[in-house]
Amino acid sequence: MEPTTFVLFGATGDLAKRKIYPALYNLFVRGKLPSAFSVIGLGRREWTDETLRANVEQSLRRFSRTKPDDEAALGRFLRAFRYCVLDIGREADYQRLLKLVKEREAELGIPENRLFYLSVGPEHFGPIADNIRSSGLGSGRGWKRLVIEKPFGHDLASARELNRKLGESFAEHEIYRIDHYLGKPVVQRLEALGRHPAVRGLWTGRRPANVQIVADESVGVEERAGYYDKSGALRDMFQNHLLQLLMMTAVHLPGGGSGDVHQRKKRIMEALRPVTKETAAACIVRGQYAEGFIGGSPVVGYTAEPGIAPDSQTDTFIAARLEIDNDDWRGVPFYIRTGKRLREKSTRIVVEFGAPEGQPEHGSDLLVIEIGPNERVTLQRGVQFAGSAEGIEQVSVELDINGDNSPEAYENLIGDALAGDPTFFAHWDEVELSWRWVQPVLDAFAENRVPLHRYAAGGFGPAESDALPAKDGFRWWLDDRSDAKSDKSEGERYVCQSNG
Ligand SMILES: NC(=O)c1ccc[n+]([C@@H]2O[C@H](COP(=O)([O-])OP(=O)(O)OC[C@H]3O[C@@H](n4cnc5c(N)ncnc54)[C@H](OP(=O)(O)O)[C@@H]3O)[C@@H](O)[C@H]2O)c1
Image (cartoon, rainbow, N blue to C red; front, side, top):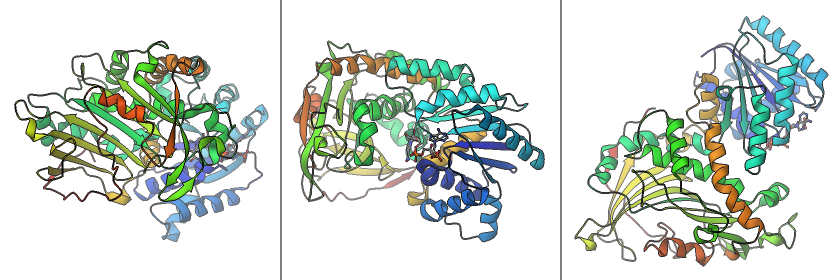
């Protein structure tokens, strides 16, 4: 990997502390950082190099999956860090930054390869990109990269404007848009899963009946009221994470086509049957949580949360029925569901195959891809609609995922950005097409064309969400609606070689 300077805007912030420093440290421990590496942390706080290093060390002790027990190695890691006071809006500060970056490049004898990581609010992305260009920071003799994280706009027009602005300073191939769902180990192995013989076998002679993509959360709005109330589930989860999971599922499971992954994802979004604001209510369910119980404890409704207006119409739940109009997926509904204050946290993809022809007693076969909190893939054969677990054959499709100690999403993604591998980042085409699909739904919400259903905290969302697959003769799988968890036995294990 080429020697690099990692310029971190927002080095004093929460994301840096929780995710970025631990990710860098674990890459270092695994030998996946460039041999010569310089980190320049930035913020308005009057920190010194020593304050930054002390904060980094503290963050590793608290949040890193590998604890920094080896003092010598920790010392080598921390020596790479320098701090520079910088106010994003003050041009002169970028000259001081440029001077420091160059001094360190000279000291380490490294080329002018610069990765700018923007761990700051999205309102700062445009001004930072401008200042990187005008200060000369972006015109070194090496490569430059810009790493940013959602939100990429709050609607189609603002996303386009942000992209236009960034495009004045960075080319598309230099922009790495993080969607941390794409860094999750199971999602990174979907391609390998699609090649697995047991999975390919499912597709032999038949097609899925439907696909379900679920990202349930049991938490409420927490400390994010100010941001969340202007965003809602459609913008916060659906437009980015869930549509990315849809694209990844559609391109990597068998029959997903060939060619460059970004082109294939783009083709999926182009084939996604559009909705209009007039038709949105037929395929979208919008909800907001009311009071209820989570894990036996009472919780307040959304509008009683601190910082939320009592008459807020913000969606905390979205369910949707989508169709992909291409040869691989035509006629296979994709049901998507996400919401806050649901029964339990679960992120999963379930692909349902109906009973083989002429054998209705066999029940459905399910490919269950659990992304979080568990990471595993299972085949469940012969699952009855409402029947007992008797007769179900359950097979784990084992991927090379190292349980609790697998790399975190940020570790995978920062490693890829340093290596210049864009595979697991969101290309602008995907972001724009996602906003294009979502915009009429936002318009329909604004005109109140889609009813806002209140649902009790601790359940599975409004009844209207259950009706969405039910209208097609399906139901949401794996919702454990009983109080006792079902006791399913583990079946035979197959090993799937992954890309590592
Ligand atoms: N925290 C998470 O887990 C998380 C997860 C996903 C995405 N994000 C996104 O990541 C971004 C950062 O989140 P965060 O939680 O780290 O926020 P935060 O704790 O509020 O930190 C914000 C950072 O921005 C810096 N900053 C703000 N205004 C600045 C200015 N004018 N000049 C220079 N630096 C400035 C702050 O430094 P000073 O105060 O020292 O100036 C601080 O380091 C946000 O867009 C957030 O949505 C966060």
